[in-house]
Amino acid sequence: IMGQILIRNLDDDVIAYYKARAAEAGLSLEAYLREFFTDHVNFDVKAFLGEVDACLAKAEGFTPLDTEKMIRLNKAQRDDRAIDQFKLDSGAA
Image (cartoon, rainbow, N blue to C red; front, side, top):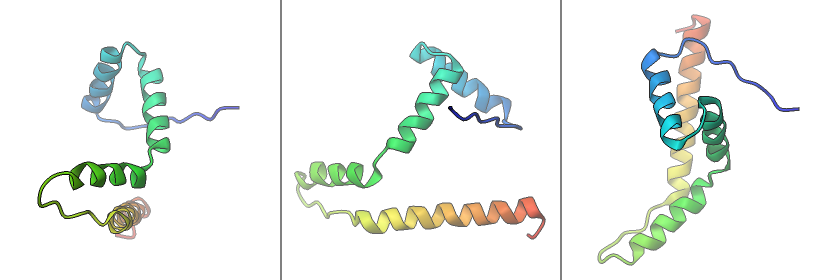
């Protein structure tokens, strides 16, 4: 059984943007967003950043990125935003 998501209160501009992307891809909005969400779940940030490092390492004067630190920082920022949103939603702000 596959789950469903209903997202309320999306700005009309956001909907129009994704409808246009779906049309460009020759997909329905539903199919486009399904593919978009699936791709993002399966996206391996650490592997991607490693590939970026490998490509940039060929450039003269390159300083490698600290991918572990970048991933931790990104997670911390997402966690902070989630906490802030929870506070707004619960009226604790």
